[in-house]
Image 1 (cartoon, rainbow, N blue to C red):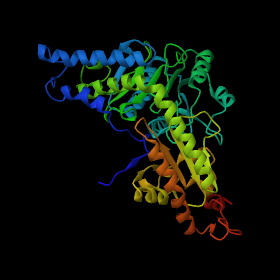
Image 2 (image 1 turned 120 degrees about the horizontal axis):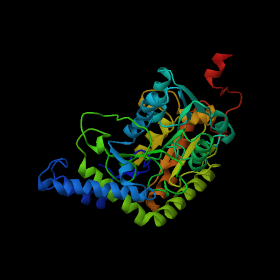
Image 3 (image 1 turned 45 degrees about the horizontal axis):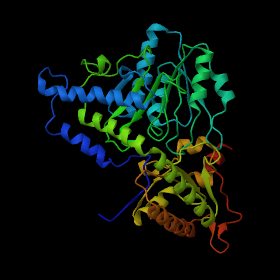
Length: 415
């Protein structure tokens, strides 16, 4: 396989060597079922208990029994929403209102859409061009029958951060019975998450291991003690009866080791990655005309850059980068068989001429300066080559053509 430059870390990350090393004993000699009563199984049970304490510590020192291990953040999100609302349907059946945003990950967005089909009323908060919600809109949306607020900590496409400390506090001050959930998949290990301090008003928090150099197939759901939540998987006593199924010991151990490793290197990693992102954006902005940086005006994750290239298709950009051995992702869903652009970029009102030509680059602790420089070298040429074939682009003046309609055809159809 040809050498690659990996710049798609918001999609998944490589397993850290230290994490793999910690996992190996539980894939080989310590393979026993942690629920078994014999002595040989005790190291596995002890490893889970220790990992639970580790995760609790990295969430500000919450109680270990508030940590639930799942298979991924998608499962955690599903349980947070379905589980709490199922419990509330018995305890407070009059609460049938949910608040979320228009830019959530599908693991939340599709759940609330399903709940809406079951009779729940859902408020989808819009975002502005920078990707932020209006706090005044949020306050107006809170109602006497609001059961749950689910707002992500950082958007996986734009990297834009939401002020969940403020949003969760407002919810609780409005009505302490309102439950607040956040999907912290993109922020866990990349910034402090103190559920005892600034984030103490959050009731449920989800994240996944494979976004922080642990393996795919392990996630976590924090459930604050006293929060009503019905089991999502039944048929066993594991996880204190909250999730049936034999625990994935090796992956749980790997997740805990990944969190410790991130804490050890956090300050150095974040500083270096921010420099990489800022250097990349500054240089590309000078070299590529009609380039926008989505979310630049808002607080955002330091490892994420979402670029909107006017007058070309994101799919073409990905193919061009792939030819050069660079892995990235597009803001368009075209690679999944749809020509519809990302719901996140549509919600952010990215112009029609750019919404199909968006590109996400996301870095990690393993990203190097040489890799960033190579992206800076390759991407302008890829964009230039695509624009030469674009019906909207005038090659002679190196700008958009005059008298060529660039109206969104969906808008034209509505007229």
